[in-house]
Amino acid sequence: MKRTGILFFPAFDWSLGDSHPEREERLLYTQEQLFEEGILDLPQIKQFSPRVATRHEVLRTQALFPNSEAHTSTLDAHLIAAGSAILLGEARVRGDIANGFVLARPPGHHSGATVWGNRGFCTLNNEAILVNHLRAQFGIQKIAIVDTDVHHGDGTQDIFYHDPNVLFISLHQDGRTLYPGTGFVNEKGGPNAWNQTLNIPLPPGTGDEGYHYVLENWVLPQLQAFAPDLIINSAGQDNHFTDPLASMNLTAGGYGRITELLQPDLAVLEGGYSIEGALPYVNLAILLALAGEDYHHVREPQKLDHPVLTLASLKPYLQELKKQHQTFKPNFTIQNKEFFPQGNWIYIPHNVYYDTEGFQETRHDYIRQCSHCAGTIYIESRRSSSPQSILVRIPFQACPECEQAGYDLWDHLLHHSEHTSSGLLQNQLHDKLFVWERKEGLTQL
Image (cartoon, rainbow, N blue to C red):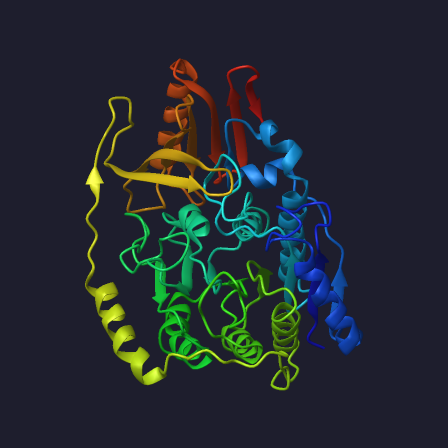
């Protein structure tokens, strides 16, 4: 029997405010709906209990600056959300389930490679932590992440932008009309992973027909060509026509069809803030589609009364978008610092605004150009006028030259740290982590 795993974590003790869209009621109404419908009594549904992600599991993927301990008091719920994604992912890889749905909060897809706080309701990136855990512990080679949240998954893109073995696809409302203002077709990946990022910004008003057309004619061919070992769906549900934060027109049944088309190995909850009018019905449709049950009779109580963008008007826009994507060519800047190891280092400036807490992160990203692997990454990051923190990443399947380059950069940091408050070396090749902090010194995790 095809088993579908489900895991609930409402995070009762984490909220951004009693009236904030991101609060525990987001999942409580869904739980009640599934109980009422008897879905959890289906023989193919298997429930799981949450677990807590470890510090190592987080730092393998994300640097918590200025130091990981500074985030401890605010991370409990985030660690459980990330750990829950890992737990259900492990069940899928071991064959305990055929697919699964992680219904956990807080969300995570706006959280990037470096973390100074919460932005877009996100502090830890649940899907990214899951993906790198499966690669490190189970040797999974190629994974695709399809983000169907209405907001661009800029944090997930940031983490995997230079990784040729992770295909990241994001369908979202056009960033010119919605937070975080990114996710355009020219964002196609770094120098060693060009074309491994696909952004499809859709105009406000796009509904079921438009989304399904894009999936069938653009997303699915990309997935087929990439041939991933696993597909992860960042299942944001704020494209629903009742969502208060966006302007799209998906229905619960439309979400069921998206799930049916993608056939994800795992769906991980992201956004969705129509707590009573959408989430219980959208989650029900997604779960039914995963379990191979009929979702077509799922109906939300409110009727769609917004004008929906017709497919006839959407097609010319998509054709032009596809043309722009195909014709856009890489134009990277080489900038080598005096202490950089041999090779060409691509410089990409990267500024991040933390809207939840109201501050700016300034980043200077350098990637070693390499024809054999994802390339070593060196990132200088600071919050406002604070001292910089540094991330050095040796990637999965790193070639010997890039691995040595990473250790050379780390050695330079340890011997020239007068302007640096902390640093993290992620050796993803051997799953080793080294943390340096001015007060605590050097620690291996």
